[in-house]
Length: 252
Length: 252
DNA sequence: ACCTTATGACAACACCGTTGACCTGTTAAC
DNA sequence: GTTAACAGGTCAACGGTGTTGTCATAAGGT
Image 1 (tube, rainbow over the protein chains, first blue to last red):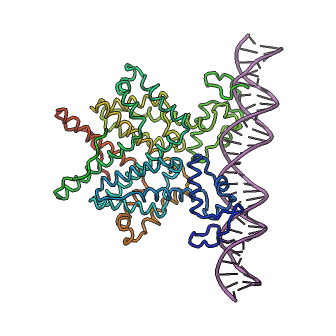
Image 2 (cartoon, rainbow over the protein chains, first blue to last red):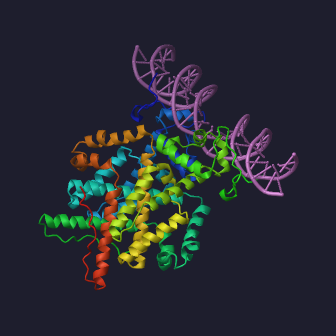
Image 3 (tube, chains in turn green, purple, red, brown):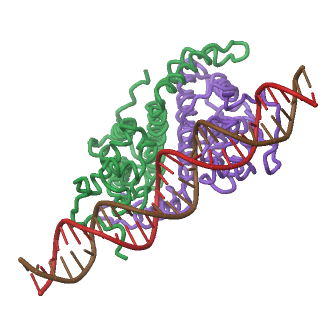
């Protein structure tokens, strides 16, 4: 039996499907992304994807060994899109802030795909490129290797995790999402001060704050803590440094 | 047609199934949790749960409108369990560290439920209790209201988001999970230094670090940044304080 | 002892991912 | 040009899934 999946480089025969479409890895990934955005994450199934492409479901197994393979390809495409819009400036703190916010925004732009891809290691081109770049930013800023890896890991996971969390909310049916917002106003903001003093005292802030994403603030905390570590490291190694980094905008 | 799901309070007829088991919401939730723990996250399906209970799958729909309902019931039980095992000591930093780690561990113990419940606001008893308690810890530590809410939000979202992220990995089929670990060893650790200098230089650290959860480190960063803010606030308001908090264990 | 009805069982529906066997058009070699 | 190989599309089937409409019956209140 000939191998089921042929590597993209070796593909040459471009036989169209019954409905005249010429399949390709790229076309499949793009269609899958469109499908997810338009009809929800649940809409992504081999069969539906086949239908959307005008091809038999089993054809897709000529391009991906199983659904998981397809998900990884989608995830990598998302990483690539985010990375392509980012230009590092040399100021590590500003660069990481910018990248983090872009990753988060990218996730929100494709909520369903983001939820699915957040926890996967693709080991593909764009992901590798992203790892290399971020590690570069940190090491050139002066973080020693072990520390750079630790901060890289925390930074990436934070962006992915918050991206997925906020995406999951965003992907809920509108009615459900509004119902949740209402809980803060209707339930929490009305708890009596004698049984729940702390909630009652901060109700105003809770209603305002919980409606927003906590990611920007969390990112700022992480960058701040990292800058602190860096200052420590620099002073310990005898450098004369006060970091002239772009300071965080005061949280509004 | 009588309503499909009868509220637990109204239940009185305790008819046993063919195999002699008397169903109840509690028994179903417990069995589901056991099933997840014993046979992995994939083992939870209505049909398998029915089989495990000695009942027809469709019987479960007398207790839960759909699978999602069941998952939420499981999640609620989890929040309760986590909160019940936590004892605040009065040291805000140690208390939050402890609670965060407990939440994370609780999520990992029941990955499927954690993923679903992470982005929901239940507004139910245990959740309210948790909000009140954490806000109390922060306000009594000296954080002003707005700051307390901001940190609370970041803290909770971080715990939930990382919990969900790590749970999602944990919920993958074992083969896939091992494949991911292999990617770091087989792909990343072997990239040549001339094309990917930063990855090559830190490969050893990457392989070791990426296999672990980044949550403990991220939590420590958040607590550190918060302590920094607190010191700032205290000194600005003229307090003579150097915080005697339990310091973070030096990251190993 | 009877009647109501809660609750369990059954069968069916429409999906799902995946595979093995088959068929056919494209391409490369002659 | 002709032809032979085979990449790649199609078909049918398997065993799984969540969910629902219908029926049967035993438990409980009267």
